[in-house]
Image (cartoon, rainbow, N blue to C red; front, side, top):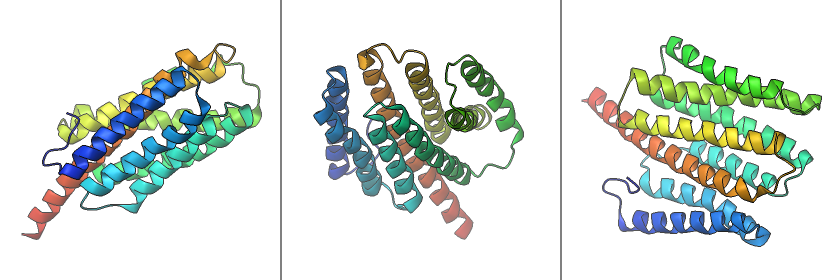
Length: 237
C-alpha cells in the first residue's frame, strides 16, 4: 500500500526517508520542539515533491505549486498567532482553489449534479460550526466562509467520484478527501474552540493527518496520470 507498483530503488529510499520525517515531525509536535518542527515540517512537503518527481512521467508544474503553497501554510501555522493564522488561511485558500481545479482536470468531471449533492452535508457541518464559533473578526469570518466552501467541494468531489466511478484512482481520491475533511475539522476545533488548551493533544494528530493528506494526494495524482496516459495512448492508436 505504501509503495508504488514498479517503484524503483530511489523511490523506495525516498519513501523510507519521507515516513522517517513524518515520525520525527509528529514526535517534535508532541514535545513542542520548535527547532525540529521548523526543520521537518517543510521537509515533509519537500519529500512529497521528490517522490512525485521520481515517480511521475508527467511532472506537472501545478503539482509542485500546490505542494509549495501547502508548505508555506504549514510554516505560517507554526508560531500559532492569530495574524499569521489569517495569512496562512489566505495562502491555503489559493492552495485549495488550485487543487480543486487540478483534480477536476484529472478526473475529467462532466456531471456536476452528484458533486453538488455530495457537497451539501459538508457545508451543513462546517457552517454550523462556524455559526457557533466565537470569532468576531470580519476578515477572519470571511476567510473561514471561503475555506468552508472549498473543503466542502474537496469532500464532495472525493465522495461523489468514489460512489459514481469506483476504481483505484478514485479510492485514493476518497482517502485524500476524507483525510482532508478530518484535518480541517481538527484544526478548526483547535483554533476556534480549544485555543486555551495545550496544543500537545491536537498538533501531533493534525500533523499526522497533514502528512497523510499529502501522501494520499500524491498517490491519487500518480494513479490519475497513469490512467490518463493509458487513455491517451489508446486514443492515439
